[in-house]
Amino acid sequence: MRSWSAPDVPSLPQLAESLRLYDTPNAATLPTTSDDGLASLYVCGITPYDATHLGHANTYVQFDLLVRYWRAAGLQVNYVQNVTDIDDPLLERAEATGVDWRELAEEQTELFRQDMDALDVIPPTSYIGAVEMIPEVVEDVERLADLGIAYQVETDDAAGADYYFDIAAAESRSDWRLGSVGGYDRPTMEELFPERGGDPQRSGKRDPLDPLLWRARRAGEPYWDGAGLGEGRPGWHIECSVIARRRLPAPFTVQGGGSDLRFPHHEFSAAHATAADQVPLAQRYMHTGMVGLQGEKMSKSQGNLVLISRLRERGEDPQAMRTLLLSNHWRSDWSYTDADLSRAAERLTAWKQALAAAPQAQHDDAAAVDADAPEELQRALMAALADNLDAPAALDQLDQWAAGNLAATTSTKRVAEVVQALLGLDLTS
Ligand SMILES: [Zn+2]
Image 1 (cartoon, rainbow, N blue to C red):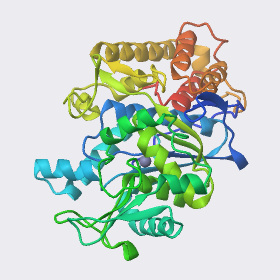
Image 2 (cartoon, helix red, strand yellow; image 1 turned 30 degrees about the vertical axis):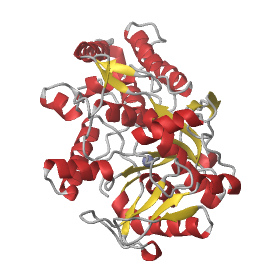
Image 3 (cartoon, rainbow, N blue to C red; image 1 turned 60 degrees about the vertical axis):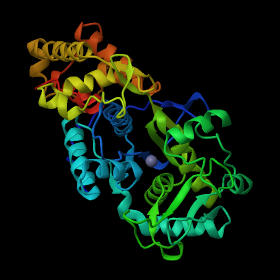
């Protein structure tokens, strides 16, 4: 699927820092290595019906920071993101608003592209809709069934059977254990499962937490040829598991998404992969914090979503939005206020003014700058980012630079390139 246009990312003198990232399964900040100069990332994409609220934007901007860090460290990045362009919430919204689900998905995906473009988020290497990967999903569900890890549940409203993932069979056949990825205990998972699309009450399941792999064709619902599975459509977790494994090495470097994906989504995407291939899905699992509004949880049911497109229509600067997002640590839960957005805009202006006000010699030296000599600011920003992608600390370093507290700048051009490459902020406009 088409993604969006790539922002300009200046190349910087290479600096080696050892990156440490907080990993959900280990509940610890750990060294994260990349083999052969390659780093691979899968970040779960949107279900296109409420694009793009500030919580989405936070996730993709924070992972954009990781992509930028890896690139500055000289790594080649393979980044895959999906679009869940077929799933219950999309169909429910289409039904409720009387719009064809395909039109809703396309319109919302396009809005998402425009918002990512405005926020200067580097597009993924591969941007893939679930609908594009259905034959591969069918293949993998059939394989899980052959291995005895998927089973049929009879339906009374469809011609064929639904397929479910057998947690107990997967545990006996692989190193994966329920809770080993999301880090939750069973009572917590039982509480979260129905809130996040699970169907614990469905009769005929072996374990109430077993997740859906393939939903047989129902009257009025979209469906695809499922070969031996019969007509139907894919479950949510198998979609990401299949896309990630078809496009990235196993295990890939980082699996990312919002903290609401810890369970069931990332738990079972990983379980499907590990049970089928006997290899973990990813080396590290990173979960971004949730963004609220004026102290309330932001959610579609509350009707208090802050949409990037609305802020843009109101004339807010996407670069100020980006500054606001980066002034919060990726793991933190926080709450949006207009006042904080104004403060972020002021901070951005102060950095631009500091750059413009630099002594004439620093502007003049732009052409003569040593291509291999990193600015002190680059060292400071990369050190902050290497320590669990600490964007607030990186922005503090930018404040220090603007206040003249870092080693002397040699070239304003290089400083602008450093800030643009690492943080995606343009101080020259
Ligand atoms: Zn996903």
